[in-house]
Amino acid sequence: MAGGSALVASLAGCSGGGGDDDPSSRGPVSIDELAFAAGRPDGYAAYEPQPDSVYGPNDVVWVYLAVSDVSGEPVVESDAANQSEQTGDESSSAGGDDGGSAGEEETIVDVDLRQRLRVEAPDGSLVAESTDEFQPTLSVRQLDSFFVATDVLHAGTPTPGEHETTVTLTDRVSETEATESATFSIES
Image (tube, rainbow, N blue to C red; front, side):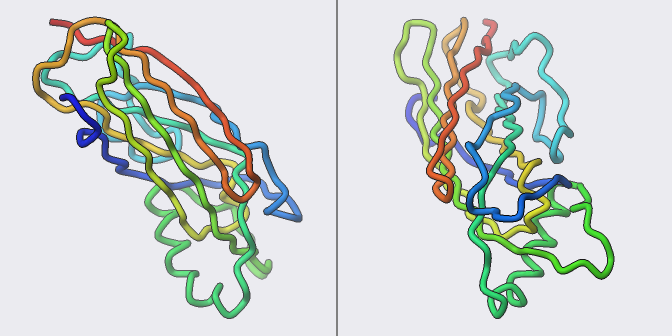
């Protein structure tokens, strides 16, 4: 369990949301929810909460983040045609609709997020730490309902007790960041 190798970013996606006229001037980025899930989240707001954030020693700990006010750099039109298939994949991975209307011209943007995640044991020692980057190409309408799910600890011999989890999300387009902390417990 020791070390950062147990940290794996597993999902990043989005669901429908509103957009601003200038997607690069949005922000500051916001973490709307930090929760612990019972299993791998299926999409934006599509996860089963872990009861009381308590896990057994053989459980995988999932951290779920709901994020809004993400900024994006508009994609040049020639690049947008090449990226449109990727944008569709991101939307469907989250199981959501991007809220588009037929006949509307869609603004496509490149997102640039960095997630730093740190988990401390009950005695304050570092259990796991990672930095993951997410750089999807999305519709501007998808920027208000973005989610990230990370599996933090795997089965093994975790220290029983409360573990402090701190997540810092940096939006490198708007040059803003948000930090949230929460606690989960491991029962012996």
